[in-house]
Length: 197
Image (tube, rainbow, N blue to C red; front, side, top):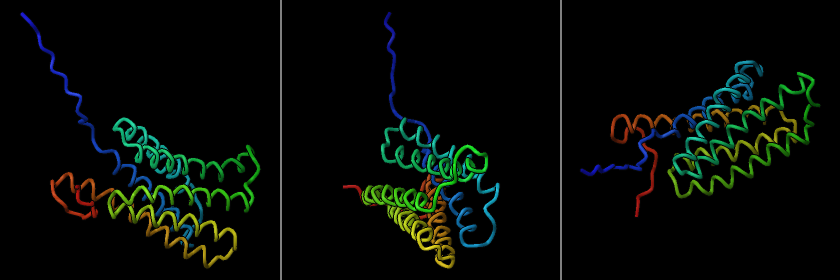
């Protein structure tokens, strides 16, 4: 008598990208409502930055690694740690752990993230139009934030906040579109996915 073991190496895990997109998008919208001048920088924003924008995206990055998605792993892992470092830059000086970052330091920090995001945007040119908008508007956002810090112009900073709200909202749209399109088994919210050759 012989026993045959059937092995299926297929990936039956859920798509983690919507969680990452929603974590990024919702945290970005809430921070940029502050940047637009509607309320102060508060514990709600910091908590979102640590737990949803930060930790959730890092977890998604690990899940994307398991799915062999280098782009997703790099994007979600990096932006998760972006949120954690941003909170660190705000909180560490208040705790007496480090000196407050200079204005020049913040300009360099934001500019470096802008360059990174521009490179990631190039990767989206092979992906959906929705992701192109997310990464394109995020590239603009980082450079606008750096310019706002360089000039100190409050009006420009408030305009930047509105651009950030649009960027975050586009990530929320993209994440929810992936969820609802899968649930309904059809295109409920278009993503502009390119035709496969």
